[in-house]
Length: 221
Image 1 (cartoon, rainbow, N blue to C red):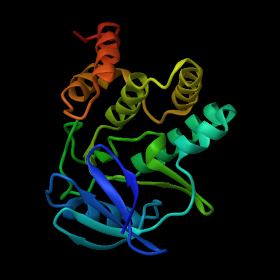
Image 2 (image 1 turned 90 degrees about the horizontal axis):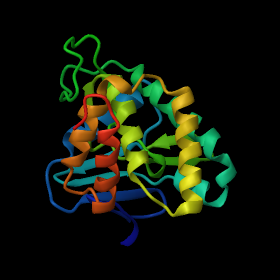
Image 3 (image 1 turned 180 degrees about the horizontal axis):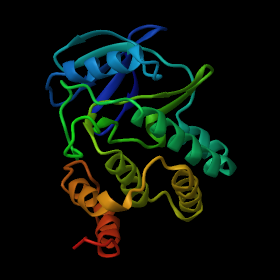
Image 4 (image 1 turned 60 degrees about the vertical axis):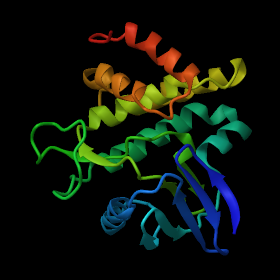
């Protein structure tokens, strides 16, 4: 198999021209992730089709096209437009009520108001296929408050650093995202930063920038 992608938790291998294997390095069942993706496909949200799930392995459709991050690297002038596109994807996702079987995180306190949250929404998790954008990596998905999902995207984008030139692009991307964001992130920002800082995969430089953000956030440390 050919390794075609590697994240902080999992590797993606090409099985053939139409399917990939996503394998989590530290094990753990992927059944709920597959169930979420199947549920979203049923309601018309664009996700990769799951062919099989076994333990820590997911076999899914192989998607054609660059990630949004790759497209931004080639065409940085599209940063603001891509930020708005990401916000639109999030708004469409937040229109989906959280099913009762889905685990809860950042819950609203009223199960009827909880929505499906991605909780890792950023440009590397959007594939720009010829048929439109497709959202990938549903390992963190939970049901809860849309404001937390929006706040987490802000925290992720505020934590990254890509050098002075590309940092400008990130700021423009974030401005576009916030202009079209489906929910106000402010009520959940301090809580989300705390949760993000507890992520063992967080890089030291990202943690440093998030702590600085926390000091400027009402309710933060």
